[in-house]
Length: 207
Image 1 (cartoon, rainbow, N blue to C red):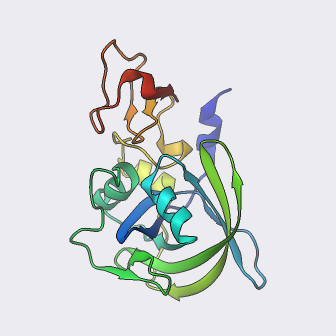
Image 2: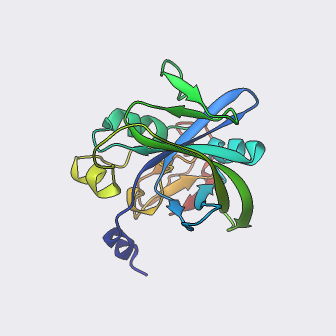
């Protein structure tokens, strides 16, 4: 199977946030899609079970998502797309707001906000697919939305701890099943440890 076939599909990029035990978690995804246009309006969302954001969404039963603007800085994508919520508070120092369910979102570099309540879910193994009804929706800005192609064409490389799906992940490498770090190399040497969470080599899977 040639995974480069998936690179022919472009995706929007979204910042998804939820609250867990009083702490805000969030990640950048390209897996948010509107699936119905009549009331109740529904969206689908897929999250990796290795993400802290997944745990927060599971606990909250809801989430807030913002449509990222094309001028979103690479640093914002790197922070929410490639760093683990286990080792860094991604919202620290940022002008965070919350929706009616207490889920966090950022207005800057966002075109709109969509808050949803989960009504169905499907276990996909390493991932969870959610079907959620829209509870709040708000326009936050104007201009074009950021896509995966925009990010990659702007020079965005694959940072270490990738959580964004498919087209931003390397085609060759090893993923830590504990924190999501991706080692972009053909093999892992004996005694190798994850530089993020210090997990041993046997906690890595081929991607």
